[in-house]
Image 1 (cartoon, rainbow, N blue to C red):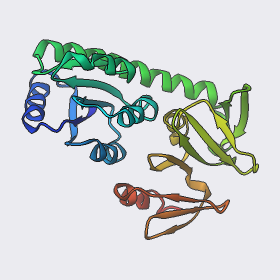
Image 2: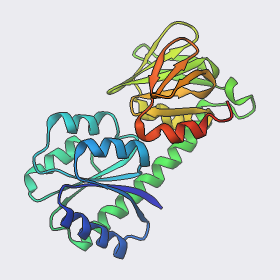
Image 3: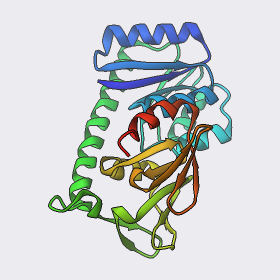
Length: 247
């Protein structure tokens, strides 16, 4: 199933889209519906969708920049609008599709089929990427990852990565070696590569090595072994606490 989030301020339009998806796209599972951009950010953290339907009729530059730079590797994006003049926004956001309201069944099916193929291809690349970057024969925390930088690649043991911090298109990797690495990969790519090795994203801008957690405070802050603090998003607290029970 394709975990799907709908962001649209028009409740009637949301209802119509949900019905169309239910009747014609059995591979889609709607995990949430949001009426505005800010709620959408929290829901993205909570549901980790494969697909986002985003309605834009008066798009904010800042909002589109966030979708364009921070999340594109995490989910596919289909933009909906009442007018064709925002079709260029869809291209700028690297969207997988653009649907004009009222949404036609045939166009929706076509877009969802296209997105389904992209998601299958992406998951296949993730599997291959794990094979390229990590050896299968050694202890999981002894694996080595090649991190692309401006100058080339730096090879770091997974156990030595304390945390990763998103910087729009780039990622700062904090290691036990005391030297931060700035990578040309965005944070979404590191999630794909590292979550299977005991890393967790407590906040949209952070990815941490659970083996490097020193303390957690109830107000929602994590102390890492290097002395740095990382926030936990409100909607992720319960999930985070479930994850660290074994630590």
